[in-house]
Amino acid sequence: MSGHEWLAIAAVLAALLAGLPLFRKLCLAFHAPPEVARKSVHVAMGLACAAFPWIFERPLPVWVLAALATVPLALLRWVPALREGIGSALHGVKRISYGEILFAPAVAAVFQLAKGDPLLYAIPVGILTVADAAGAIAGTRWGRRFYACGTGRKSAEGSAAFLVVAFLCTFLPLWLTGRTDLIHATMIALTLAIVSMMAEGISDRGFDNLIIPIGCHLLLVRFLQSDMTTMGRRLVVATMLLGLVSWGARWSTLSGSALIGSALLGYGCAILADPRCTLPLLAIFICHLVVTRQHRLGGSFDHRLDAVIAHAIGSLSWCIAVDRGLIDHRSALAGVSFAMATMLCITALATRDYVAPGKPAMLRSMAKGWTVAGLPGLLWLWHDAPRLAAPTALALVLSLAATWLSRRLESCQDISATSLWMARGTLSLLASTPALLLLNPP
Image 1 (cartoon, helix red, strand yellow):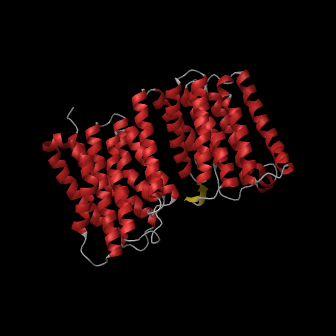
Image 2 (tube, helix red, strand yellow):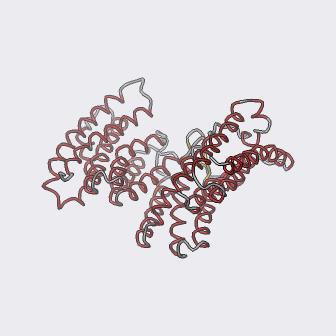
Image 3 (cartoon, one colour):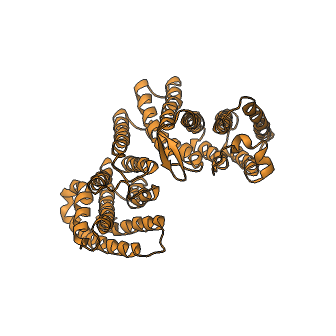
């Protein structure tokens, strides 16, 4: 590297090391709460990082800087004397967080992905620092309605503040620089703000410092390439999914972060593959609300994010495959339908075993799973009915085997809830593999 690059790295590191004691003194002088102190440091770091496109011409110095900056930040966490001293501005909050360790590598990754485009870099970093800080401070100061998130909790008020600031962090740069027109910038900013708010809502222990900047960059690239019609559809889908899970929260056994994760999963399937791929997921969610309300299961279960991840294993895998060009949309829609039909068979049987133990329920659960979760997607493939018959028949057999095996796993006393959900997701994905038979031969 050149002398100019080393000098720039040294200047940024010096500013970081000099800024921590300064922030500690300011926070002590103004009696700032620990969360305000911690987020003030994040904002200062983010604003400094936002200038990187005008300081560094290539990614290598940024990666070197990230490595060098992560070392002192890690020492501030793991060395007690440093943690209670100058590190108190970062670690005054008494909860486990790896955010400061993930911050610098995430910024370097976005700089690499942006390939010299200042907006594709600065907007994700701005959302990471300014919007995240606004959400945390608003939640600390005005939070009244809380929802569970991993080992902690977050507030609806904090999420709303994040949404507003994330919109401004996206809209103002796009509009003021002339990158897009007013309406297009508004739709991009609203959609990105909603999706990033959902991502922040499910992130625990500081992992939002990794998820938000990289995810926002990838979405922003895709959004800027979209026309007005496509962008409008994406905004409508994001808004409707968020509205649906918010409306259904009163009857759901899902935690707050799991509800947000459900909306995020549906949106991921819609944007990566096809909006029709969300239909099996929507059917399962509505069925879940009906059954929970019908049997008054609200206080009996507390399903966390692992339940959503299990559904993502069976559905998102197909959507990623079609996005990468590995399969076509027809096979992906069939795969998602087969997987979600199997997942509903598994969960419907588990529910029947809980509310009516001892009664035969296998065939009833199979019929419910394939009717409710399988048909909404498969009906769109009716014109391929002759080719669809054999894969569907094979998937039915595998679905029955997966449902039976899942029931056997539930009877194991030493299996954890998370392990059981991961096994269910894997079984549903395996049962959906006959969809590959729909691929056209090369």
